[in-house]
Length: 340
Image 1: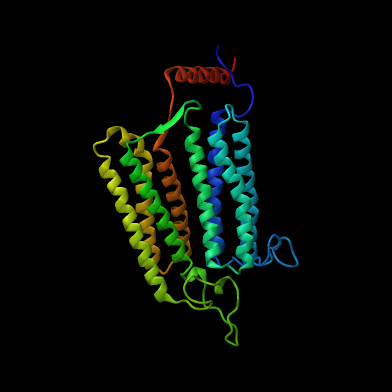
Image 2: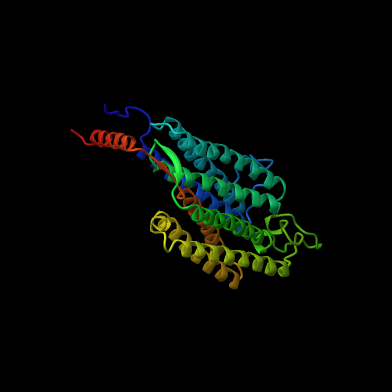
């Protein structure tokens, strides 16, 4: 007997919601970065109010930029809440999709709390780093949920590649994580984490432009530190890219595994090449805001590609009877979509 879905979200509808949530989570990473890159991190010096007199304040450029980013968070929250709701009412309901949606549903409010602590700490670089890392966790969960949503609903999870390829992917993911973390240290040391800003008496003014940095005090550029942390970051990136090419080498004689990982690995390599080019270009030109923002967006895409690559190493195995049943449901669903 054919089973027809008469309520809840269909898998196709659920995937569309997943895509929207992922786009929103990626976008707020860049908008949040622009807050810092425009020295607007303390445009609002309180939370949830903008300051001690106004809940919303757009009287200055910095306040307006920070306020717009905070308001955009509500849009992201709606997208994530809708994804969680869709995961619950999806038919059939799946535990793995619910788990990823729950991570996102909890993570977005957690980001708000971390953001508040960041402001109260006068943009402590370690807390700013935590803010970014949590965003990457949410992007990872959104990508995993999207990839998993395209798999069969029934069956058991098995490895989609041979063990040595799966271990190599895990290694690449680990080094990508290290490279991204090292990049946050560079940002937390460079000029966008704290510029020289003093009053007439020579005292340091505590604003975004004089925020603390990982290396050096407020109002201290400490260019030497920026050079060596950048070199460390660059070395880690080169090691990560080398691991990606060793993965490509190991796949040369594994036709099935190569087909499985072809799309995510190609996307990863292309993103890494562009990201590296932007990184060297921004460093050579004194870290202009536009290139730094592009580099931040590239890091987000790279994390997403890594999650895609990770998710592709496993698959859902179904029996012939289960496959036939899934096909029957798909045919019934398509018939419902065709008007009489």
